[in-house]
Length: 194
Image (cartoon, rainbow, N blue to C red; front, side, top):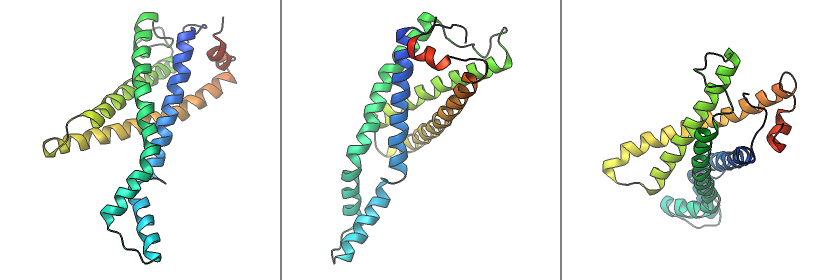
């Protein structure tokens, strides 16, 4: 790291963005697994059929969507919060300069360039995820944009995968750094350092 002191704003943004990302990833995971609409709809239809009640697949899907919606609303809340936090983070990056070595830095070691490159990719991925998420929520719908929405949704999901992997790589890097060459990095991110 270039600096050993992290400002209160930097630390707030770090932890708030981390919380928002974890909430967004968790709700996306639930949406794709246990609370996916086709799976819930199938459970509803088969459970009702056991009691002699027949329900169309559209009705079962509608009920499933109503069951899932309160949970997935938190995905949107996390996204809205992340938009505001990421705007502040971008401003902080330009005003206070990055707290990491940029991958194009000539003075940086290969490790520092890799770490800086991953930070840059994270911010790009988060920006893409949030911009696409806002488009998917509020942008135009219809046959003329169906293909565009499908491509953007795929980019949104793949960027989400990258962010999920990044979280694990980041935690592993912090653990390794804390136990080798960067002792105290966690406490500096909590209380600011010297």
